[in-house]
Image (cartoon, rainbow, N blue to C red; front, side):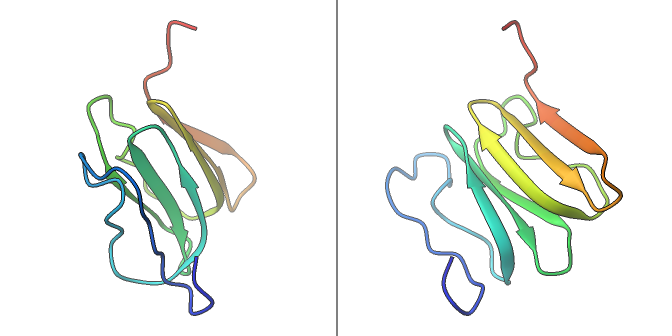
Length: 90
C-alpha cells in the first residue's frame, strides 16, 4: 500500500492478480493468484483468479482480510469471520 491508500502490485499477472482496482484501501492480503483488500469504506474488493470463488467476497464491512491459495477469510466489523473460496479437502 502506498501512503495515499492506493495499492501497487507487481509480479506475475496472468489472472489480473497484480492489477488492483482504483480506490483507497486500509489493508491488503495476497493469495496464490488473487489479491483482496479492505477498502477505506470497509468493503472488500478482490482481483485476480476466481475459479473457486476466492475473489468474490460477501457483502458487509470488514476490518481485515487474509488471502491464501484458493481461499480468503476476513474479520467483519461485527467481530465475526467470513470465508469464501475453496475449503478443502485439507
